[in-house]
Length: 468
Ligand SMILES: *[C@@H]1O[C@H](CO)[C@@H](O)[C@H](O)[C@H]1NC(C)=O
Ligand SMILES: *[C@@H]1O[C@H](CO)[C@@H](O)[C@H](O)[C@H]1NC(C)=O
Ligand SMILES: *[C@@H]1O[C@H](CO)[C@@H](O)[C@H](O)[C@H]1NC(C)=O
Ligand SMILES: *[C@@H]1O[C@H](CO)[C@@H](O)[C@H](O)[C@H]1NC(C)=O
Ligand SMILES: *[C@@H]1O[C@H](CO)[C@@H](O)[C@H](O)[C@H]1NC(C)=O
Ligand SMILES: *[C@@H]1O[C@H](CO)[C@@H](O)[C@H](O)[C@H]1NC(C)=O
Ligand SMILES: *[C@@H]1O[C@H](CO)[C@@H](O)[C@H](O)[C@H]1NC(C)=O
Image 1 (tube, rainbow, N blue to C red):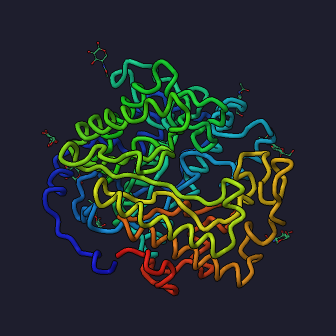
Image 2: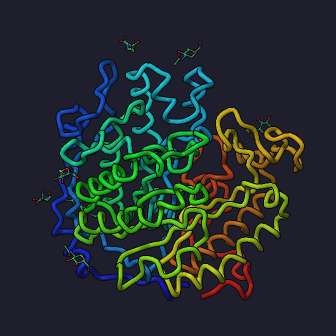
Image 3: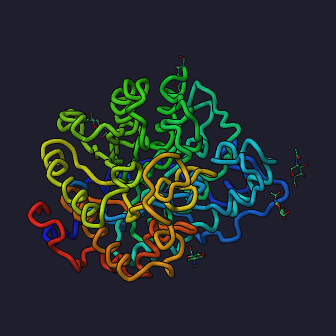
């Protein structure tokens, strides 16, 4: 694995990035609403972000070494809960609304005074992740961040699409904060995967798509898919020079028939849209859509397509069978994924595990949705297996036992082994308000995640299945 780590000299990638006309607008203009972000709501009574960058660069800073996808190992964290709210990551933001019907970012905009909601969001965008976090991520030996973004934050205009540009009731305005983050990434030599986490109509109905609904409508709406393609084109054209990877869509629910029928076509069309608009400068990430990577054999491969990455997500907590796993069964279940993934990556696409965590329960408050309990302790669905109390599994690590923390280290290493056996891994998530079992930052602090992600306490944790 260490043999795969290489220092690279720039070549054509740097030239491509430099060649791009990356139109970056000054931070101040965007915040004050004088730039082209036409549907950005300008707050009347709230102040602009307090911390402002001293300079905004424009994507032409070629001192950041291009990443060699397919050769070097992606090691990263997701900046979850920042530009797409998730009740379990920041429960305080939802509690502070005093309205239990506000369960996702859609209802957050719908059921509150818009200018008050914007003020809360601006404070959140300004403070949840700061440049200190980018420095800490770099210091932790990580080379990538994956940034989830909702479509409602992309300031597309009627010149860029023939479909509606209205995002109501979502609250727009995160774009300048995203641009600032891209500059922090650049200044700290951290590479960026920008991930469309919420599409019009919702691609999965999860609260983390912005909208918690039973029937995700992205593929069945008349215009949502072509509208999404226009949004991806806009992103690639406007900020492609600041992005290493553009992910076309997070976790589309391929098991919903309309979405399953649409997603392959969307990956193909989105690939061409993004590559063309970014001058082939951005890698394009697609996902397995919960269908398994084997469903995507011979898909968008070289020489038909260049610069494609497959994103696979792995959690072992969202059904009763997996919750019943012992500690060692969780580790085995991780290691057992390695052969199929390495086989796929070898003969198909560069493949990463773009979301995973060390959580082994669904106990984090509101993980299953605001107001929804957990399978683990029987506070959600009746007449199901109950595994025990949630105490000591989530919340503050001051309540974690030594043996639990030892396990978290082993489980972290076994899952990192999956990613190191293919082309990389991106942990979910960097931070959570009150769920340290999910927090990379707390893992570093608590010692179950090493300060150097190539350090191993259990180098043989996956035995002979570990791959290379
Ligand atoms: C980008 O920034 C550099 C350094 O500030 C400047 O020299 C260059 O002209 C800028 N390019 C564009 C296209 O704005
Ligand atoms: C929620 O209730 C608290 C306590 O009554 C109050 O201070 C706060 O302003 C309320 N928040 C909103 C958004 O109404
Ligand atoms: C929303 O809140 C602002 C500031 O508190 C206030 O000026 C405005 O009248 C409110 N709007 C509505 C529709 O209540
Ligand atoms: C909008 O429609 C017109 C007329 O069909 C077409 O020429 C144009 O390219 C379309 N614009 C976009 C952004 O798709
Ligand atoms: C380019 O990046 C380097 C290294 O991160 C940084 O020191 C420098 O200030 C950047 N230059 C510009 C013009 O942004
Ligand atoms: C992008 O790649 C395609 C396919 O290889 C090629 O046809 C096209 O000319 C390239 N575009 C640029 C701007 O390099
Ligand atoms: C520790 O766990 C107990 C029992 O669940 C809980 O009441 C307490 O708030 C927890 N302490 C922290 C710091 O999370």
